[in-house]
Length: 356
Image (tube, rainbow, N blue to C red; front, top):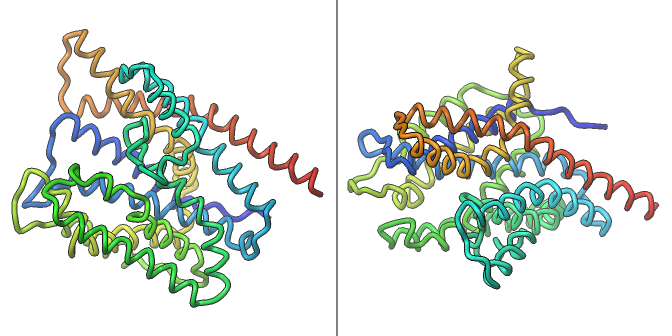
């Protein structure tokens, strides 16, 4: 029996994608949105990605909790086929497009990089090897998928493995935070910060949230999460790059708790009273992956066309233009994504017929 769709999480996923666009356009336009030492732009950029991992973890746990109570080879194969066909088609298409957009020289290094990106396994070695802006997070996501079935199986066996997994992932975040704190800029230690083990905790927290049963929702989760997000991140030392301070020390703890509480509230809410809001939440979530991957290309091409036309829009005009074009294109590419998702499902159905 199909599980109930959680429309409230669709809304969070969609809005988060729009905020990621705001973050990138702000950075590319050198527009720093800050107040009293709180670098709001960087908070959005860093913790919306962590929020996406939480949402992904909830989705995976919600769908596969019972399926991976036992480990069967056929179930594992079906899982990896399904996840690959969900991510790879659009991702690889844009990797090819990036050769033209970023004027990459065609040589043996490019071929190797293409193959690495096509496999989606680049995150195991170096997420920064992605050919797309923000693509490092896709490599990290697929890294999570490689271990997720086995971790979920062990976590359901007994509380010991549940605790070991949680403590291991928590330790990874603490260790990375300590190492990163020694650097003045996040860009100087990006390969360390972006490695999947530094973000796996958020994905797994999402999985744990999906296992909540019979928990009553309370508006206090949302209020506390929003207040923590708004008022956390203040730094004692004012610098031009706030990012290291946002991912280390107390700020790392408070901002992580804030996005977790926000996601928890919307997970427990399930749906909105207004059906039209549920409909548009579903619609926006359906294009969120495309929005995330497409908007850097839309920005580049839009800026080129505006420069050629000698038009100099304001920041908000440019953001609105990039957002509208991205949403329209994302709706088009949604059908391309859906074709390959359906193709993956047909392959799984054929495999199941053969094995049965």
